[in-house]
Length: 208
Image (tube, rainbow, N blue to C red; front, side):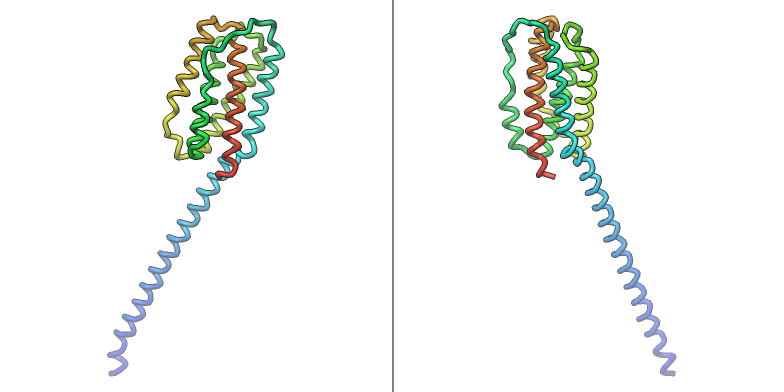
């Protein structure tokens, strides 16, 4: 009789122990899943921004070399006064901003440069193949850097920077008929931008 009375108690203890083990197993599975998700997310971020550390400078040097090659092909042109001020203040502002802001700004610079060089450059003294190579690399830089931005890619572009490039297009290229002299101004301005962009990129190497 005593055994019969103790059986329900033993059953309840066994069931409670089973429920406790099941709950613990579920918690461990959740923790394991969370850790795995975090590891994969971190790895993805590291891989996407590893290009920034190891490839950006290499590609930027290639574009600078192509710009120098364009300069070698320039024939005697009349020196043109640049009527559009270089946006040094924008670079100073973004240099104090977050890593994401610096990336967004750099991507915008590259995209604006590419848009300029898509305009009619038939009067320039450069070989068309050199310009195509330049555009391919600049567009690749913009695409790869954009992948580093990740979830921050929705950030707004800098309106003042866009207006600066619009002025280059209107006051330099269009008003001067896309002449060789106008394109030489754009070439010099572009080189200055790419050098400043590399400075921004260098400041991000310790930010990842």
